[in-house]
Length: 214
Ligand code: ADP
Ligand code: AMP
Image 1 (cartoon, rainbow, N blue to C red):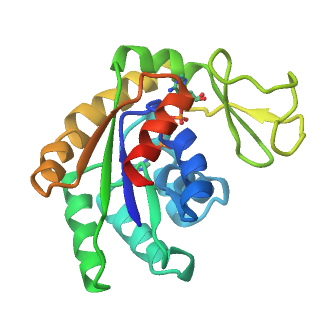
Image 2: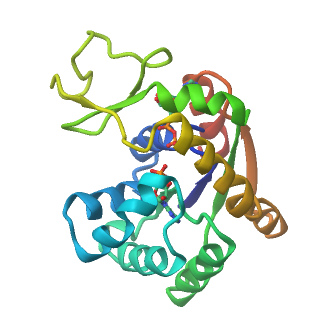
């Protein structure tokens, strides 16, 4: 099964991808995570994109298309994947269709995670992750069961993203409205689009997603 999760920063794409990976037995491909790894490794692409990401701008379609095309050709994607954070522009969506068609594949579902954009600032400012296993948490909405310790790996080290600050968040939300929201009619016309209420509590969003796939 090949799924795209569409929604502004903070909509819960990463949170739900982790659950879906386990339930559906397919992997999450987060372009944001891949780009952050490139920046952390100080590769030549990483050096080119660091300041763009820090400022909340989108990375070029060329970089994304090459990165995702290489990634989905790997054997661990043969059963399918959950794309989190990609495509983000019409050019990326069209390139994705072409690269899948070359392998006789196509997307099965595109999920619009519909939210109140104003509430996303609170979600993103409160977000933190386990440095060791990547598990995601929130100061208010998803706290670790034992304060200061990751529920999944028991490690005590958490981190916050440097682009999760109010100024950058505004810019990222605007980038979503301007450049990513046009993908909604694009996928609706292909009869792939399903919309869920991603303002509901995390467990409710999970069960609404399961009702679509399972
Ligand atoms: P995205 O990947 O779409 O940017 P995340 O999955 O990282 O969003 O979620 C952003 C923050 O909001 C995280 O701290 C997460 O724990 C929290 N969160 C996710 N979904 C919900 C929800 N339905 N209700 C409340 N908080 C949520
Ligand atoms: P995310 O982790 O999805 O919130 O993405 C973090 C940042 O990575 C974004 O603000 C962009 O700078 C960059 N990014 C991630 N995915 C894409 C994409 N598909 N196209 C362009 N830029 C992206």
